[in-house]
Length: 288
Ligand code: GDP
Image (cartoon, rainbow, N blue to C red; front, side, top):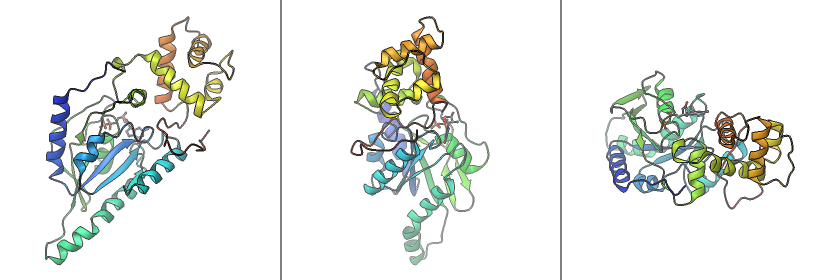
């Protein structure tokens, strides 16, 4: 993980651009990946958002462990942060998200009205690290394929306002910030969910982190899913990777086995799995 470095110049530019956009809007939707709610949250975002009203939306809830999503939402709400889970891809939770935006602006518009200012649409922007689903959410909000999506980090577009009904105007270019982390586990979690390019990480090493996580929190899952031949509970992660390579008949190509495992995880084939776990809550039931 050490080889991943973010250039301070790029970070400063991204921060400046996000701040400029922020001046144009009433509120911010901070988008994260529900499988890694903390790892996909750039601490700089909190600093940039500062006093702006904001809603934290944990996207890709369809891929995450629902029990842990519930816990994370509760965790953020306890910190005074409005938070909810959405699945932009399948348009779930979007009405709740719109309602949360409206609720957040009620006081502001009431004050404006008292001053004699005519009501206007709520101006929104979406902010987040690459791959959390910003373009997908913009597309779904607007209802047409106006924003470009892709599985590659950092797709950018020209800036326009998009109308969402009569009530909202959305900046068509999301604010993009790069992930920022010191803890290597955060880096691994970002890589496992595809937020960091695969070329930057060693796939075998990455697969061992995933195997370790699955064995600890979803025991038996790998054994059952892949019908691992010589599996036993005391196996180390590297032994499981070896067993997987043998079971898949990959002739000691451990990298290919690692890639297959990571691919299956990303494709939701292994089930709904959350990688970031709230530290203070140890006995969380999982969905398996
Ligand atoms: P951006 O880089 O933040 O703009 O992310 P994109 O909108 O390009 O999405 C990245 C990938 O995640 C794409 O392959 C999307 O189809 C996928 N995606 C986005 N939202 C969801 C979601 O809620 N659920 C699932 N399963 N996939 C999603």
